[in-house]
Length: 217
Image 1 (cartoon, helix red, strand yellow):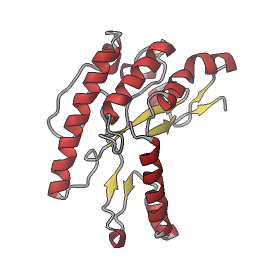
Image 2: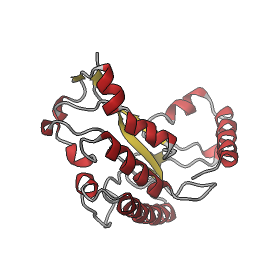
Image 3: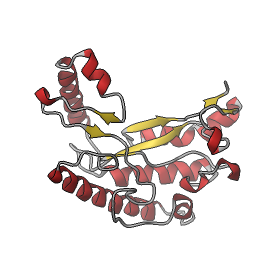
Image 4: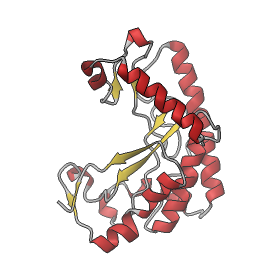
């Protein structure tokens, strides 16, 4: 986990780069396919990569059981070790892609994983990506997976984890862009939010992806 001193260094470095970029260049960095900025030696970069149960869509990789099956082990150690292996393969693939000048989709170090949504309704269609219906277990395994992906170095991330989808991601998958997920205040704070809080506080997760759907309007 990156320590606070090094985190401040990275933040200062990022601000310094941003100060040298005009508004149009800054805007070009907001899409998942970010453009190159040659004068600052910034290569183009695609932020979209997946590793829910192995490095996805970028050639041969170890395929582990889906998240719902890993959760059935009830083992932080197993989930952590699995994520460690995934991040090692992701680093190797990234290094090889960089060597070849391949900056395409699924070739980066930013993993849009883990999915720590609560699985309540099989009609959602993506429940297999989650750790199930229990908020405590989801938080526990989510943190283990994040730590395994991000590594233990105090200066650099091995890969970057992204917890998704904040926070009540539900409803039929084909309606996800306009579905309104309704959750009461008690359910929101006791069921849907705890795993995300743990991901941030205990896992020091690098990013949190928003849900596609509306929540409570």
